[in-house]
Image (cartoon, rainbow, N blue to C red; front, top):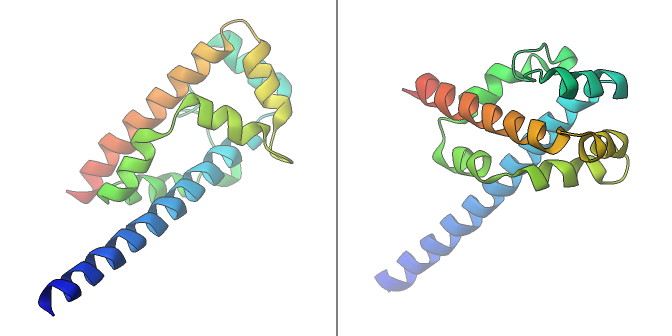
Length: 137
């Protein structure tokens, strides 16, 4: 009976972790879309052309979420979700439905736009994962 109980707990843990993964991914996706939504098409084009770092600019209405997002990275499950998201994920999130397909198009069609987005994601991950560790320490 002890083995069955252990298996049941293992299954419950995996289900709970899977739900947390999805919740974290949805939160990260929502915040990234929210940050991008603060930019007009012209501002995004300028950010790409000037190679602006989106981490260092104010996130408008989403600025209050920055410290909360960083603190969530103390949890290894959350950190793993952030570590694993890609440029393709971000473009996909922007292209879906009523998100910001106009911004996805600018990123894809502007010379250097894809590379710029790659740098933004690398910077985003670095700040979240490094500062999240410091917060959780």
